[in-house]
Length: 83
Image (cartoon, rainbow, N blue to C red):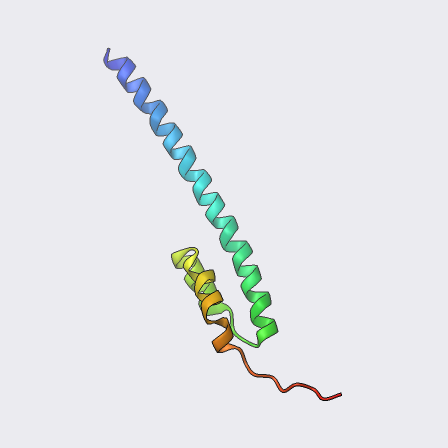
């Protein structure tokens, strides 16, 4: 009886761990793609993306969200060329 219980709990923990690994891989992919986007967007706007990338690595999706909210106010104003 105890052997059956131990076998079932081991199967449960194996599923739990595999789901945890999948979640971490998905979050890592999100962090890489969001960081790439933030770097490209910051280059266009004349900003530094490093603060947002650090926040992304530490707090997940809070970095890209903060970048989206603050990017208009932080953008460097470039003079428009007159043609």
